[in-house]
Length: 288
Ligand code: PLP
Image (cartoon, protein in one colour):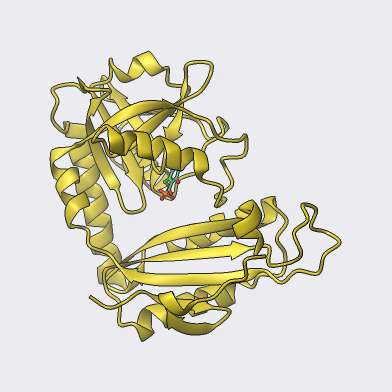
């Protein structure tokens, strides 16, 4: 397996050789944004969408002066240099390093531009996609700007750890008003009577690239979609539940908090969306 290959400010090196200052604000404050991209056969999937979201995250926290076209070229050069095929790209842009002080405008900062590429073994997730996975519910303890893909992931980490300790793959997060937001590192949909339901984007969730892609697939397949609040109790009445995410793709959920979802097997809507997703990737690869 090739070792992960990093690119920091245009310099390629093994990931383990990268050195970042302890005064980098991502280390001290989580003052950074990131993206994770899936690469199929050396080709980044939904690349434009990821760069658009990164641009939005940077603008939202006022990190300026990052040339995203240059970052994109570096990404392609790093994938090619490592001869990567099935891999993921992690991209991380922080506000930079400076003496520790909360306010940033009066400091002269150069953003940290780091990415790395690493081989991706889809085997375990492919098995979960085939058989379905189990999830727990967990309180959403995050801040009010989860639309920004920031590296402040402590609440997500604690939620996902609780899931792992319960032998589950994910935690579906609920808000104090009893409605659901999203999952610790995925978006999710329920399917009730053939209708796809998902939390609206305004409800403090990440605009998932895969969420959006699955919505487009559903439109193509004439599967009706309702973007409205999902109550926690609704999870236990759903015929199907699916998680979506960059590496999860379309992942059926077969148990929530130990209770079966529908028949306890991946359902027909999940299967249809999985087929359409795989077909779209095949078409993408044949076009590029
Ligand atoms: N929601 C959260 C909180 C996430 O961290 C992620 C992915 O990391 C997602 C949803 C899924 O987003 P995407 O489909 O863009 O990977």
